[in-house]
Amino acid sequence: MFAHGCDAFLFIEHIVPKLSVKTKDEILKEKILDGADKLFQKYGLDKTTMEEIAREAGKGKSTLYYYFKSKEEIFDAIIQREKNEFFNYVQEEVSKAPTAVEKLKVFVTIRFKRLKEITNLYNIMITEVKAALNLDTICKPNYRQQYDQKEANIVKSILQYGIVSGEFRVFSESEMDMMVFVFMSAQNGLEMDLIIYDRLDEMLTRLNFFHEIMLSGIRK
Amino acid sequence: MFAHGCDAFLFIEHIVPKLSVKTKDEILKEKILDGADKLFQKYGLDKTTMEEIAREAGKGKSTLYYYFKSKEEIFDAIIQREKNEFFNYVQEEVSKAPTAVEKLKVFVTIRFKRLKEITNLYNIMITEVKAALNLDTICKPNYRQQYDQKEANIVKSILQYGIVSGEFRVFSESEMDMMVFVFMSAQNGLEMDLIIYDRLDEMLTRLNFFHEIMLSGIRK
Image (tube, rainbow over all chains, first blue to last red; front, side, top):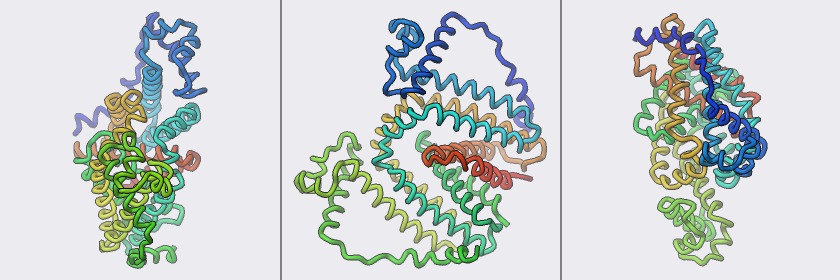
């Protein structure tokens, strides 16, 4: 336990920047990614071609294909780069916060801001993904919202029951709504990861653990 | 508050089944949905045609088109039907549990079992959706897993820091890993809902509320 606990104090070491000299190849790759990123933000993935990406970088198509096999590979590289930069930034900011509670708050707030930026920058691509998922036909947002509301009402009733029965501490009406939203979203997130990671078997243990924590947070 | 609190005791009333006589139209629609459901489970959405759905129901294509405009609309109707049945079942089971904590446990367990069933039944369709999302190229599961692990390590360090500093109660190593997973998945779920519902503005309040609850659950 303590050997692990001590790792927590090594934050500072993790953030020492690696001073490396970039090769010509790396510089050109960066240039390609920068240009492609601009195009993706402006036109989305579907409407951007390898030809346009090459032109934006001021290079021929064959040079571009030497570095990347497809625009999907380029987009993948952009995501990886963005994630690495973001990761270093998070680690740096978290290490500055004085307490664990503050660190957690910084972590969450930075992630939130980034999410907001990304949804703005890649608005067109998000629309493309939603379309690919047939979100408009299959999971009509309105319908999903209606159903989510029905399920949310069950959770709300349970919480209200627990307040009346004295199991839970009293929440205001607006706190109650937030609690329900948070509970359902967290639940959906856990379930989604199950599917993505094919980890259905350990999942019930994890869900129960989550509810233990949430419950000790709201118990009287 | 109490006017709302009392709703919680009305569970039983909600579950009185509506005894309704089905019309011929409704019976035929049900038959179409049953047949289409079989085909979707077996071949997925892409490879199932309206012609096959009509044949499975023992009807002509024009009869089928009278009821449904497309296979997507049929699939939508199947989801809606399944959700309604599931919703009634959940409500019934939840109303039987004696305490709020038990009710919540029933709610979560039933959802989990259903998710497991659905992922088995619609395995092919899930693969189709993953492919449509380009999950294999853009969000390579391995890469996502690696990155998630990096972020998870930040959260783990924060929790360990909080234990050492005396802010949080002590967790075992396996509890700690679950805690981190749960925290990250819940966080991802909240963020995903933000994007789907375009509710970025109220979101920071909700995220903070979520962390307040989680934190009071793990504080010393």
